[in-house]
Structure formats: C-alpha cells, structure tokens
Amino acid sequence: MSNPVLGLPPPFEESDMKTVVFSLLVLVTTASLLLAETADEVRRQALGKWERTLAVQGSQFRMVKDIGEETETVSVLSNDGELVTQWELDYRIEVVDGICVFHMLDLEFTAGPRKGEKVGEQGKYQFRIHDDKWHEIQNLQIGANDAPQFNVFERVVSSSTVNASTNGEVGNDEPELRFEEVRQLFDGKQSVP
Image (cartoon, rainbow, N blue to C red):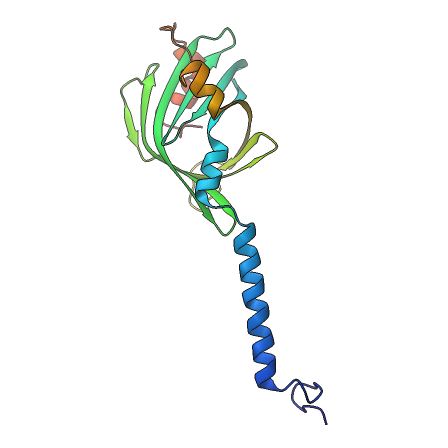
C-alpha cells in the first residue's frame, strides 16, 4: 500500500524521507564547501603584479597593480614609462556566496599631484582571477555614483618573482608628472579606478 500523501511506496514513509532529504542537504553543503575557495586562497592567487592599459583624453597609459601580502600599490605610467601618479592602500579580500570582494582601505597617494593626500576607505568591488587575468567590476553596488566599469588586468609577474627581482617596486626614479593628461581621473571629484 502506498503513502496517500506523498504517493511513495510503503518503505518510504515520511520519517524515512526526512532522513533522505537531510542526507542530501549535508552532501550538497559539504561538496560546495570543498569546492569553494577561501579568502586566503584567493589572496594567495592575487599576489604579484598585474597590468592593463588605460586611455585618457586620447593618451595611453599603463596601470600596474602590485598586490603584496597586506597592501596594494597602483602605479599609472605614461607610454614612455614615466610615473604619472601612484597610490597605496591596505586591502581585505572576502568570498561571499562564491563571489570575491576586494575591500580598499586607507588609500593614500604616494606620487603625483595628489601625493600625501589620504582618501581613507575607497570602497569595494567584485573580482575574479582566471587564466592569469584579474577581472574586476567596479561601481556595481546600488547607489554607486558612477556607471559600472569592467577592467581586466593581465598577470605580469608572480609574487615570488616580484619579491626576488624588484622588491615590489615600480618606477624608482623621480618622474616628470603629467597631471593634465590624467586630470579627469585624479582630480578628487571622481573615484580612483
């Protein structure tokens, strides 16, 4: 005789069905935890130098992101390698429902026309590292003042090579600053890319 409510054959009573459902939930949860990356694993993948090109008012620039253990240094260089501006910030990475979130904390400009200016917490953005590319989406959250922006950085150097060969530094010489070329991005009225 079958169960009239569930339409199941007699061996599958409601109490047995609860056990089966609970077992499946435990199995699915365990599998998803094993597959999910931790924030520390993502942080280790992020270590190193990343680069992308940036066009401002018809001029091309290189943006170099150097991710260290606790800080990120971003340098904007002209086509001929001159340092235009640079900032450093503390960061925190978290993984929320399988989405990597990069929190930018205590941003301070270390070179360029805004050198010495402390901006403080600059926000957060979603990102993913895949095939030695850093994909980031900024301004996606509700209430963001600017339109969403999608950037892709390519890995230039892994963290072990950065530490061994360059001490993590970009542009050691004091450069000629080209403020007018990047004024739109760095005038203090727009968020830092």
